[in-house]
Image (cartoon, rainbow, N blue to C red; front, side):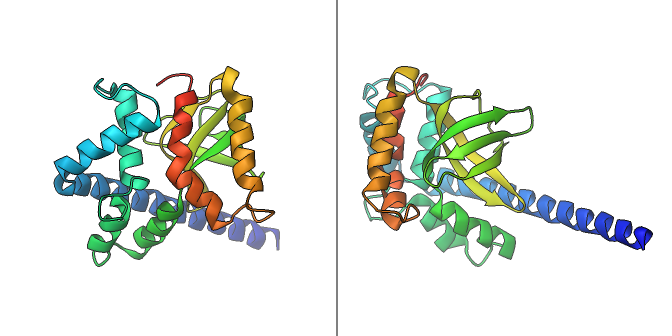
Length: 225
């Protein structure tokens, strides 16, 4: 009986690992296709419009060039949150154009990526492999892992990050920014006001919509840009 139980557990763990490998690969494939799509399809005039709006939202000098870190923030905001002149998000257009070429695991991930927002978290613990964070919108405590871009945060930081479920794990998509210690209370108050305005339904569409539109604005209070 013990041998059978042990064998079952080993098999289950292997299945779990295999599913996670497939989810990780699907995320990598979506990411690669997405940014290739943006490079080829994004209109130059649209990019210029987006850069001006992004600079305004984070209170950055309009004619000053972005450094590498800020460029990464811009690119992820441009892809996932920015609304084009025709009223669509770049990622939504990508899914529409590629829906017949994406595998089921990739399409499932795309559904989560569409709903993903730049959300506030409190970092409770950090290790080399993952972070433990409190997601301020729900109060849930979760372990999250960096994906391609290392999240350089420390225990106690109040930060904003995009989190997406992938298999049995949660991945941090894109760069993270940390709120300056002197502005944490101000930002927490604004976030709490947004949550309280929706009542007890903290997963309400209005909160998601608020963060989709204004989440990046909190970057003006970031420690480093």
